[in-house]
Length: 199
Ligand code: A4P
Ligand code: MG
Image (cartoon, rainbow, N blue to C red; front, side):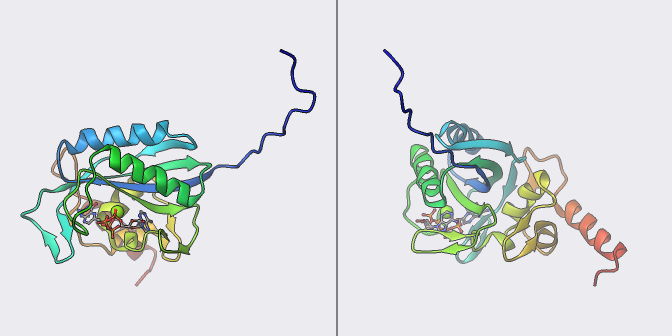
């Protein structure tokens, strides 16, 4: 077969960085999160750049922290993607489905939740998607693993995540638990702020 004389120019779309948060508090939580990260990396248009350490956190319900509910494992991945934000949400939703996600109760127990925390620093709010994720700024279970791999990251509209993390109070433990908590990171941050003369 001869090559076409006028090959169609390939449309190249440049990739952008994005940050996804994964959470699981039902089933084999670690296996689910690791399989979901592999699924994301295998999806067309997504390359996983880095997976954070896993952390274990008590379930946050609409009524507050619920110590009777199964604890969550949470993690963050930094990705590069050529997908637009809504196409990325479609992939994220299909990976959640593949891992048995059932939507019965808002903030209910789940095998897998994947949120888009940041998409190239963009701010957006429509009926399907809010960027950055509207509650990421106050959640230790998002900020602590993100900070562990990208300490200089910023959350659009909110500023440096190191500062946001220092203001959180949730109980975020390394998994498997080595006895330390991310309070150490917060304490270091406070000390750095004091040395720098911050109020
Ligand atoms: N949606 C809008 N913006 C986004 C975004 N940036 N990323 C829409 C992902 N989805 C986004 O989500 C509801 C709708 O949000 C979707 O249809 C999507 O179009 P959902 O996953 O169906 O339901 P949900 O997760 O129960 O609700 P929501 O409000 O997204 O909850 P969150 O804020 O994700 O919180 N406790 C601990 N310890 N660890 C956790 O990970 N997660 C939650 C869920 C609650 N408690 C937790 C944890
Ligand atoms: Mg969600």
